[in-house]
Image (cartoon, rainbow, N blue to C red; front, side, top):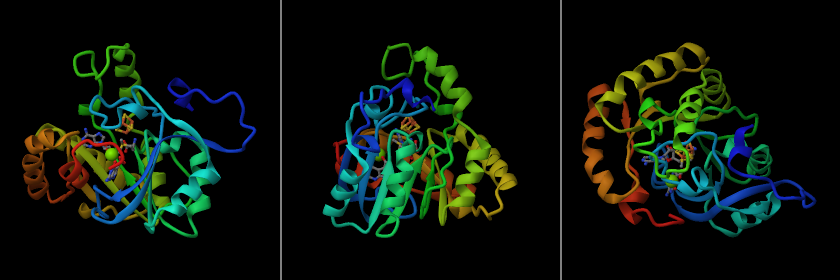
Length: 257
Ligand SMILES: C[S@@+](CC[C@H](N)C(=O)[O-])C[C@H]1O[C@@H](n2cnc3c(N)ncnc32)[C@H](O)[C@@H]1O
Ligand SMILES: Nc1nc2[nH]cc(C(=O)O)c2c(=O)[nH]1
Ligand code: SF4
Ligand SMILES: [Mg+2]
């Protein structure tokens, strides 16, 4: 698992299963089919991709975190009120312990996993929120948010960003799913249509157009204001669903929102 590229393990695992946690907070689900639902967010650190636009820079390009025991995470989730829990990252599925966490939470919570779709899981998931990364996400020396050798990541990201077997497995396995694409402009649509066709070809499940969500790229209110109307128009034109980024509209790019 390429997580060691970005997140080194602590010296000892004596305390049992531990996860690198970047933040843990209660908010409203800002994206997707459950937008507006009060939810607890568990954000793991470390990712196997490097989207140039990643809005969680401190879980991907420059990971920072505290190592927390799975039981400690469960206790913090229990202390917050929401019935819905969103496990996100970074890429939560790079950590084997994420499956342990999901299993521990499954009896008591509705579980959404936010994933880039490159990895599979056997863990219980109510909503697989899959955000496959398009060619327009690939970092280049020009667009990367850091100059620490983004060139290496151009090729790594490009070769890892789509894994059709993992996409099929995630769609087939979860109780419900959504394919949530970050859209930078009209040029992304041919790739989305072709990828949706490919997923339809490999899953046993029906993938309705309403399971396909277009989400405007934008880390800040100002950036979103420049992209969202175009992306909403594209959703209407192509018959896909539009998802806002409510948390960005409401709280801009503040941490723990
Ligand atoms: C930070 S990612 C973590 C989960 C997983 N790594 C993934 O990419 O799906 C959470 C969500 O934010 C989306 N996202 C990240 N940066 C974004 C941006 N600049 N604009 C719009 N959505 C973004 C991702 O596509 C994903 O749906
Ligand atoms: N409010 C809120 N909703 C979200 N939905 C998905 C998020 C994520 O970062 O995965 C996210 C997030 O960071 N905040
Ligand atoms: S896959 Fe998700 S966490 Fe990883 S770099 Fe892309 S948006 Fe960020
Ligand atoms: Mg987010």
